[in-house]
Length: 468
Image (cartoon, rainbow, N blue to C red; front, side, top):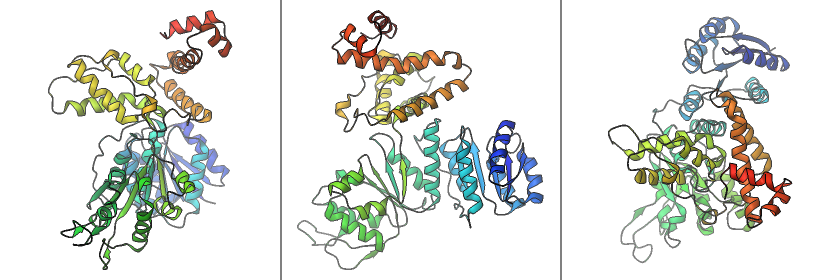
């Protein structure tokens, strides 16, 4: 029978995890603090430990090394309600077997405990410099899950494919993976494939020998060779020409680069992180992207969430951008009013975090050091200007999940819980009413019939939400 030690100061969590562990056939012991767990660990020698981060006394992350001293090389599953990138990285770096954010469902923990019991061995991440990553911000569940994926990718040395809409922070994620990896002291070579000249892309990537082509007056080291010992970041990887895809795949498989016009290969050792906002599987079906290169680049996949799926992160992002855009300015930072924040939460954000930064920069200029009001915000970007935006890609099920996550967060905040119902209606109803009015050219009676309500009721709601 496997032994499971649960360390959490919430009795309800301990009870739930105990029942879960017993259902797996484990003998479960609980502790309410790291100090208690340390006292038990040497005697119990548990097979798996589930450890909360926020504990009275010694915190969970600090206790990991001591628990290993007492209990040996035991897999430790870290759980926390305060997930951010630094916490996730520190957990993985300290040798955590898995990292799970609250609120979680028991099936998540059950799966992690089952894997921990079955594991043969677990490789720990090697120590690395604790370098902060600029702009990786968010407390929502979807961002905490992203932090977890970034931390796991940093601890390994495999190829990573970052997917997500334009402006979601794919290069920031790539830099975070590099900075927290064992390659942190090596170069980070970023190349935007879409910006390369088609005629010179091969030379840029692989380098060339003198005289290889007209104008090649001297030899040049390619970007792949420059990334030796570090990380090569291929942004907009979907735009690599087919002919170069073949040569790139060969270089990745052989760990050798042959410059244009050369015959002697150059040995390289770099990790590739790729990024794209396009559907690579669709491009494979279209015959414009090689399936073997796709599988080579996508050993580990991370999806960067669009801003509209994490609207509760907007205040934190706004605060970050205000501080960054002010630079070294003295005095109190300008206040972004609640009305302005409410307006920001209502927007679709087809340009994602990059668009939000631009909006805040515009607002600070217009506000001239005063409070930022809704009228200081620049207009939202038209969906037609963003490729793939407004195409209905968010499913009904995904929308339900997002609203459920928002509701749980709102109800946990005592200052918002009593207004949660009204606030949710203000999120859900106005877009539907606007869409119905637009469809019927502002004909209130026709829109009311479409929505199944009386036109008087519709008029009242339009007035309530300030919809013209």
